[in-house]
Length: 152
Image (tube, rainbow, N blue to C red; front, side, top):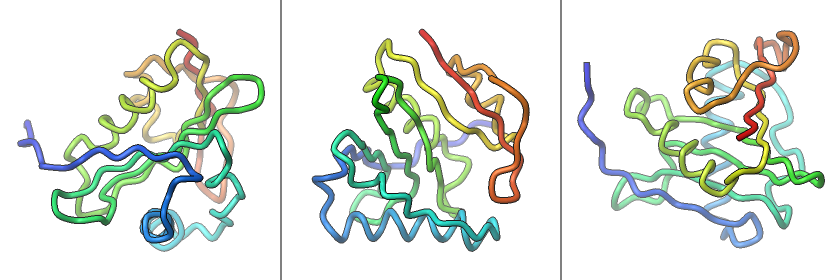
């Protein structure tokens, strides 16, 4: 079954360039899904959102400033990129938003290596972008994950 495209605008912003309202909306979405919906009490605020090399990607409905889906791209000191905090609001799921965000982030990554910690149930999704599992499954905040790596 194919879904019809949903009008959403892609946004990309450096961490240091986020205005307070943008950062608040992003953090609210992450909290709503990761902490409340997934019932995983953890410290989402890890000090990396405003680092100089941090990029934030999100999709918002046309005419709205609230993110429907979001991901964070970090650049590590060794030149490896890390995709994380991939999240979609419950009412926006099934529309391909995570795919659009990962594609956009991988444009920034280019030919550099990239890693992520995937919740186990979405490993095949990340594999469709060339990520391969690396190591054994581990539990992060009560949820099974696999580390995955993409080396173009």
